[in-house]
Length: 519
Image (cartoon, rainbow, N blue to C red; front, side):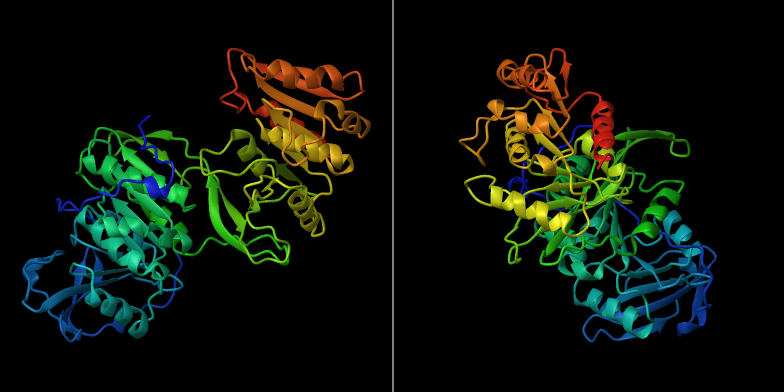
């Protein structure tokens, strides 16, 4: 497993992300095999070929931005040779049949270097466009020319290799609403682009980085970008080629990259839960765990992680100004909800760290994850929990959620359940600590009768070496059984208070699914 930079917040990320002018590079994209009208005659001027597709060349006046057809010399072949003072070279390559929406990829540097992804995208109906570096008003003029005169999609897929990554991120962070996705190959970033990654995340721009494990740009650029984008709630996938330096770029089989681009040229279709009065911001919830695969054409192993390789769920956080006063409620939405709209009412925040295997498994089974807000320095309040429960159940969510509490937060789950035993399907706790901020005067261990009377099953997962075990989980177990309650404690041998998550999530998932389905 390759090490990742550990960053606790975007503010603490390294500021010295310096641009390094590097070697040749290339970029890639991918659309759908759908036939549409032939648009090769939409462009004026001399026509040549590029890897079997029609190519049109242009020049742009750097001062007036005037774009004129240009006759590329035959000696150039598929590439570009030389510069004309005061002019920028521009290229458009046309697919045989354009895909719906006229998607296009924007190559940001090093024309015709490792073009296999672009060729694959052309086969799927993408246009390929290029304008000589570097970003500025000329790039803005080229973008306007393509979308206004030729009807190209308003959100191109960006591809940048090495210095091309600098260019891609520089223009994209300045125009985050004009980008569908970014594929970057061993990229570098300017510090000012790094500082604006939040604008890409807010505009839901997915990122894919393909890097060599022996390229120093991995540690100094890609891994900090990965950490920052996680913290910002964006989607970023990373592929690391073992034992590969800066070159070669891309993959010999371009389909994985082209597939990713094709799948990300349209916005994520997820919609916020229909809860009138709540205004949400959207982010994502997915595992950061690595997967490993051998790529025979590359003859290397590739370590991969991110939404391209694992289920990814939409997360919605309530903003201020809503009529319920529920700033900070977090809801993670399953792809296909289970019958009855079951949900887990979490007593703790849903963080940006690696998601728990239990929660990911429950999402896969159609459960919603819901965390009540902790909106003040005073900690959780009954009013906020009650309001969260009410708005969800008033709008179709199950009347009896599963309660989940971890560590000290488990005391809050117990306290709210004791006050509302008719509103709980079951209670799951990891290394619980039995005290409550929400109900400071409620003796939790002496109040378990309400849960037993309501027939609420309880499951604890605890470390055998947890100092809190005897006075908390064991104490609950000793009292709940004689009261007629059903409680199971799973001891993890040799484990202390941390880590809190069970080694085997399946018994916990089965427990919650089984008991939530009864209601």
